[in-house]
Image (tube, rainbow, N blue to C red; front, side, top):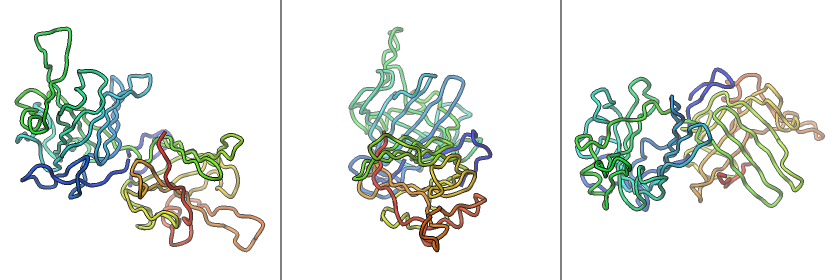
Length: 348
């Protein structure tokens, strides 16, 4: 669990993932992407960001796809999307032992995926339908962070006006040829941090209205629209979070969702509430998420609620806590806080 020391401190994340099956004989801890079965989970799964002198990079890595985006000051745009055909968590393709050809590049936590492009911004990224190699490694300064690189080599070095990437017709060709020795990995993006897996704008339309969640690296806003326009139910700062399980070591997400796929939670501190039934400004509660059981592209959300005055039939204030640690240990399904959930929210 990572902790934030302030409202604007960057937190590290991330989007729900499932495990894969090997397409490559003789590899351990490997898997197949689209269409494959299950033997291992890709080690690079999640949502990762890296901000440097020239902008911000983002990698969204799911059970079967990779999307790489960049932001040079005007918002994120997609450089490429690709299907994961196969992967290994226990080394690099073609016997390479470092993520790039640089003598100072990482040699620990190595892995790679064979990817097939489904969308590209330019020929410098790749070509739709063709194959390339994506690599990751443990960052040398912070083992919780990743170094990422995707194979690139100018396909027309004699033409100074164009820089198309070299790509391949088959996965096997990419595995064999996209290597350090062949000049495909001159550099890597070093030190990408995982961000909160539930990050994004989400929407769920139901019988009685529409729910909205806007989740950033440090805040959550929840709104509802019952036909007269969206109204904020609560805003909260994210104090701490985990992408790898529920608080208090629980395995049941809520009374209305049976999913156990990639659960996570955040300890939140309210900064705005519509009523005491939601919470109290300055107090703490727990927000949870899980990948939907039937649609892996959607999420189930719930925020802890338990009537603080059950003997008073006229009021229904939520139970909240003075400290984050109290909320984290006390707000559980077993103690009656998560009877309900909103299931199947779609990313906008």
